[in-house]
Image 1 (cartoon, rainbow, N blue to C red):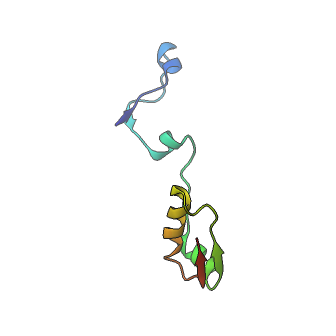
Image 2 (cartoon, rainbow, N blue to C red):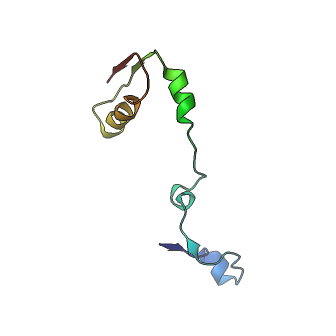
Image 3 (tube, one colour):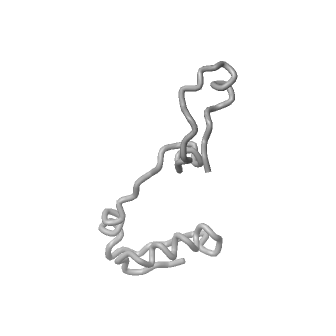
Length: 76
C-alpha cells in the first residue's frame, strides 16, 4: 500500500512529498508509541492486578498480555 500527497498539495502544485510506503503513523494519525516491557514487568512484579471489563474484547486481550508478567495475582 502506498501514500500519495494530500489533495490540497496536488491541486496547488505544492506537492512536497512523493509516493511512499505507508507507515503506522499514517493510519494512527499520531506517532507510534514504543512500550518498555521490562519497565512494565518491574512495575507489576509481585502485585495484584484487577482488570475491569475483562469480558470484552479489549479487556480480555489486556488480561492475556498481563498473564506474561510476573504478577502475584491477576483478577479478570
